[in-house]
Each structure stands twice: as structure tokens, then as C-alpha cells.
Image (tube, rainbow over all chains, first blue to last red; front, side, top):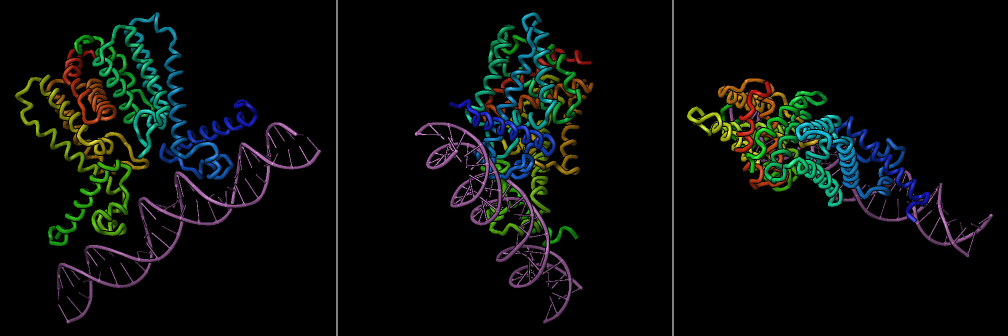
Length: 194
Length: 194
DNA sequence: TCGGAAATCCGAACAGCGTTAGGAATTATG
DNA sequence: CATAATTCCTAACGCTGTTCGGATTTCCGA
């Protein structure tokens, strides 16, 4: 039985470890997460962490999954996309994404820059990211944008806005404000990429 | 006198160190550059590197400057921008940039993703990057694009194309092919961002 | 309730990292 | 030729992620 008391306690400890890891990542930077201080923040010893995660990479992996789940929830919080025009829904989606990236630099670096040397998300963790990408592909499809070239141009545009925002005006809105003009620009020549 | 035999030999050794560092970065990844193997590749000992660079960060710094100089030369190799139309020169510039990024993943990560935990370019190294940015700003100005919003949208668009290309199709042309449609899209609504 | 099993923890240690100290060897120069 | 500057290396320090071995605690069925 995987839902016994031990499993619940184990899951709670894992969550606490990830929570502390996020906190360190936000204050010290994503690369500043190290095992001994992380363990100390939880009142335990570094080797004890290995009872819960196979290693530091597995911790990053779990954080990567958490981040992608948070992104999915954020995007799905825009419930009534159906009632919006294509333009409105694109603006809402892109704005939500850029805001999400702009909220937490460490999370952005983990999810979208591959910022930890030598680390790559595991196959199952990456699958969660693909799932998110698929959702936004479905969104664009629902408003009639289906060609790979159009989708690629859209992802480049939105990710460019997000990365510029995070890198050059973190927490601000210098590129966030450009979401609306960017959507208009994108829609104005949609079809030109066919 | 800084141009004596000793200074020349010293400069040659520094170049050799950077050369070996680039080679390791290209094969092992940017974060895979470590002092002892780097020194070993040059037949010397790790502490000897400190005769030439203040530390590992200083090596990254010098690589950062080298990379930006290479970018400037590449961009300036497009000599006859004057004889092109605005559209042609934008296409040429963006294509050159994306190609430059796509050639060397390690170089791209060093210059444009801030991929080494805890490392930031020094002020004087960053100045070289600003110099490059200023050149492309001048280019856009010369074709009548002056507003900050337009410039920001342009940088987001081009950097988005480059990062998507490098991350998802390294060495390929999936996003490189989108440079031309992207420029058309950008120009079609230029003025809408005022 | 007792006892074996499972879960959890920790101290010690290993290899690798960037870096420093101190001194020896080489090279340049007055 | 001798002094000074340059260049190099060995040893070591504190940090990193990680493993080992064993002790301690917690669970759970007889």
C-alpha cells in the first residue's frame, strides 16, 4: 500500500525538501542550491537527502516538474478562452506566460534556460513540459493557426519577450507591455508564413 | 614597455589558454571547463593558470569578450547594408545573428544565456556587449526605427528566434528559415508600436 | 506486547572543484 | 655575471556531490 502513514510522511518530507530548495534557489540563485545547506535548512544531514532523492539532479528534476505543473495551472486559470476573440486569447495567454516567467527568475532559468551545467530534465520530467507545449499548440489550433512555421514563429516571439523581460528588466514590465503589439503584429501577417 | 618579448609570450599563452578553454567548452559543455584539465591540455599545472588569469571567472570574462568581438566582426562583415533595402538589411542582420548563435552552442550560452551559476561578465567585458547592441541600434535607426518599443520588440523577436533555434534544433535551420517571414511581420506593423 | 523488518538518520570518507601559499626553476636584464 | 622578474610546481585548504557502514527510530504482524 503506497498510501500508508509512512508514504505520506515520506511525501511530506520530499515536499519540504523541494520547498527549501526553491527558497534557496530564489535567494542564492539556482546554482546556489547545495546539499549540505539544503539539508541544514531542514535540520538534517546531507546524506539523509539521499533517502528521498537519488541525488541533486533528481531534486532539480522534481523542481522542474513542479514548475511545469505550476505553469499549466496558471495557463488553465484562463478559463474562458472560448468566449474571447482570437486576439484576446492570444494576448491573455502570452501575458500570462511572460508574467509567470517574470515572477520567479530561478524557476524561469530552470524551466526554459538550461542553466545548470550538465543537468537535463529526465525523460518523464520533460514529458510534462511537452504536455504544456501541446496545450498551447492546441490553443493556437483552436483559433486556426496550425502550420508548424506559424507555431514556431509564435513560440520564438513569446519566448523572446519572456527572456528579454527576465534578463533585462526582471520584475518590471518593459517587455510585458509589448505583448499586445506583438500579438497584433503576429496576427497581421498570419498566413504569410504558410 | 608592454610589447617586449615577455609580453608577447605572455599574450600568446593567454590566447592558448582561451583556445583550449573554447575547445573544452565546445566538447564538454560550457560548465565542463575546469582548471586542472584545462591546464593539463596545455601541459601545465592548474596553479600556473593563475599567472595569466586571476581565476576561472576571468577566463570566462575573456571568452565573453572574444565572443562579442567575433560577433561584431561577423556583423560588420555585412558591408554593404547601405545598398540594401530596409527589409534586406534586416534579413541579413538577423540571419547573420541567428547563424552566429547556431554555430557554437557554448558561445551562445556564454554570451546570451547567463549559464554559469554565479558568474557575470565584468563591467568592461559587458561594455563590449553594449557596444554590439549599440551597433544594431544604430542600424535600425538608419532605416527609421527609433522608438524604444520597436527596438525592444525587434530584440525580443531576433533573440527568440536564436534561442529557439539553438535549444530545439541546434545546427539546423528550423527557426533560421523563419527570419525572413519574421522580418516581414515586423515591418508590416512597424509604427503600430509607437 | 514483543521482535524482526523496514525506514530513517548521521559521521566519516572519497574524489573532484577553485584557489592560495611557498618555494624552486627558468628567463630576462642591468 | 648577478640580480630581478617571470614562470612553474607541490602541497594544502575549504568547498562540492556522493557513498559506505552502522546506529537509531519507527512500523507492523504474530
